[in-house]
Image 1 (cartoon, helix red, strand yellow):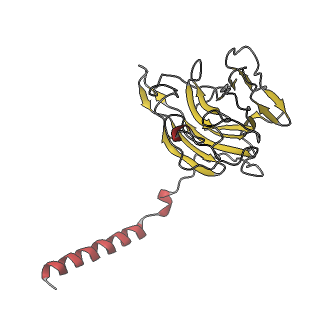
Image 2: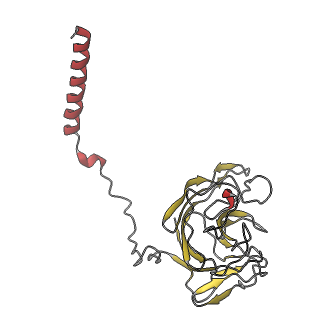
Image 3: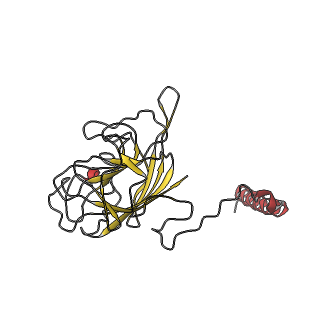
Length: 258
């Protein structure tokens, strides 16, 4: 062993022992934080049940928290029956009366067992995480029957429509209830309307991760490229797609503001 190697070994040993000695001398209380104290939240009995601090958007009884997108002065016209709300084709999209920025959303949905059609015309709907303007502008996570149905992958269930492919296809058979658990971080804008920070989505479908802190490229568009336009807090919107297949149903919708 040459002198240079001995010197390096000695230096490493000295450095390590010094670091250990210094660590022992540091009071561990210097790295303990006691404020702010996180609020106490009582969880639901199951992961799908609303926790104590959630805002209930639909409890199976009425659409008091919702309104028509076509005319915000009118109530939502979808059908409430047997604890679920079902798209009433031709009445248009519905959105929450309240506006939100960052939040955790739980929503359950079901494709009819007797669904017909193929591709995008098979139980098509969508959850728009911010209704940013007229028409279907907003940020959409797709709802569709993809259990045994082929379509373009950036338009299948769990995708950020026309933007990001889901990490997995975890669709259940038509007729079975499915769920989304979504964390939405809204985009922020500078005073001149330019994007300060883009929006991000983390989403679980049926308990499986399908979007992992996905950066949103802009509002959902059917033709062309997504783009951003400045907005603040916005409603959550559900889509009446208008395709000829049987309409889908939603239930157990709640949100936690973050």
